[in-house]
Length: 86
Length: 222
Image 1: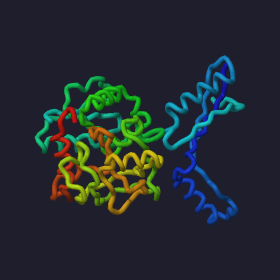
Image 2: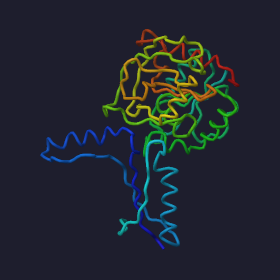
Image 3: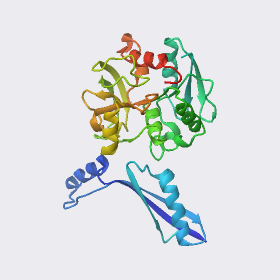
Image 4: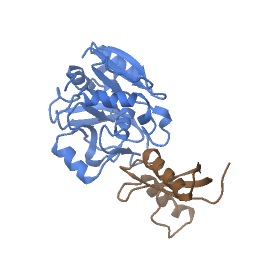
């Protein structure tokens, strides 16, 4: 089977996020009020050949921890997506 | 030190500056492509500044998997002096040769300016010839130079004298003003400032000399 997997990489709790903070500060000037806790991160999408959903997620988690994220400052989470983007 | 290998990744751009600095100190230099798997011919290895593999994903994230990095690891394990400058420092942290990580500068600005550094430990191949408390004016040139690590690691780095250089006026938000640090053994050092660009008063500063002279004076089994 071919599974569509999304990996989200976010900064770990307590790690400074100047990008998120800058975006948050810019929002009031655009008329968006009441928005807080803005965090910047990365999202990766991929198709994975695997025998099961679990195996696809395991593979995605493994590659996310090895390459897509730096465990010193980032967390990675893999989830199944619904559509395959070519 | 007679022969220094300067590793060139696709996207490195300070290898000639580093080579010129080494030659000025009387050392034979060879530029080695990142596909090299053997560094045993060298007495020292430098990972220069630049944007290895385009800095895609994170600075150093892809360079870490270049074939040469296994050789750098081996060279370091055997006590060989290894110096990572700017992007080279980022590569060394990604590869786990130095602890912590380098994040985007706190002001999200690319910084290109002279900075004043303070020598805080001479327990490394880069600072062995410098005096603790000595101030050095050396330029920085980076976007991701904000050093970070967990509290436990920071405590260990400070206790062991592994924090070798600090910014006098922290320009990028680095934890504890850290500009450069060494591994426990002192033979692997990384720093964000560019000592190879501070080799001549005619070009602004010659304060990088004391650092690179220390590196050149280092023994293979530091």
